[in-house]
Image (tube, rainbow, N blue to C red; front, side):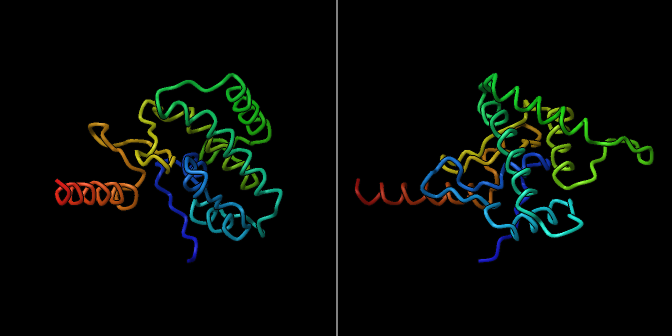
Length: 183
């Protein structure tokens, strides 16, 4: 089946983190960046068009940014605190990207000349601009995807209602039906 990037985190930084599928289920974990063409597809879907073919170095830079972001965001999503080492790694990521970025006047803002820099800037903006009190982890025990819950009452449970949410509803239905037969 052809890879189609799913950008459902509510922010480019979260969509980067979510390039690891089934992160919490080691038997099913899939790194979508394992193959360079999939990195290219993700960059295009995310609106970060590389000027040339994706290299191993670009992929490695994206994976490093992804891992740093995940190490800080995952504990926050479940009401915990990231480790000091994770915070220090995030600090390095942010200071490195700010040091290498330029400030443009029209429109005003930080810009990076390379796709990895643009994605690292997005990670920085996630921490700077978003209400991380709305950060959630998918309610499916194996999924592990992160998202911003922008629902009015803050009740979103699934990365995707059509995927993890539907699977949970089907599982509950099966358990109810099975329980009815054995009672």
